[in-house]
Image (cartoon, rainbow, N blue to C red; front, side, top):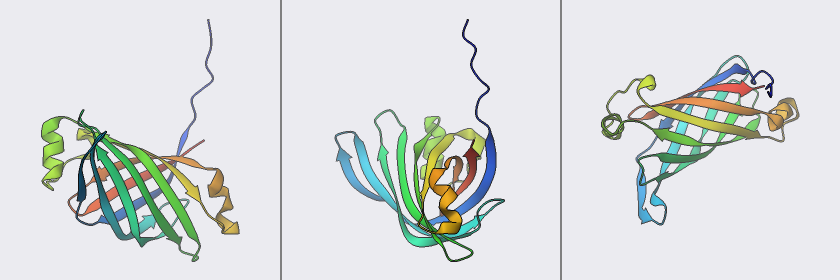
Length: 156
């Protein structure tokens, strides 16, 4: 019988509130509806990382035929000390069709009513944040009409 080692831990890292602009659709594509959401400003607050979001990020998405939303967000955090940190966040959002329809209409939907998770990677040239270049984090998200709220947990 094979014994697996204990699973990696998840340590609270930060909370992100990101303003989202209107969705832009590129229409039906080979793998589903291709679309993107321009990202505005926002805040980053937590035990490990604090700062603001630099306006201009983009959340590229594919709305797949099976109802799953493939997410590939790319944005920049300006840490409180002025350092810039690139963020790449790839994941999935899905749930029961009626819940996803409520989200699409901009209605309030509790985070536990659907799945919204991403794998987050960081890149920076700032020496004081260089440790982030070796970090993987998991984000648990909640979509609101004009905001995305993410809780990031460092994967140990």
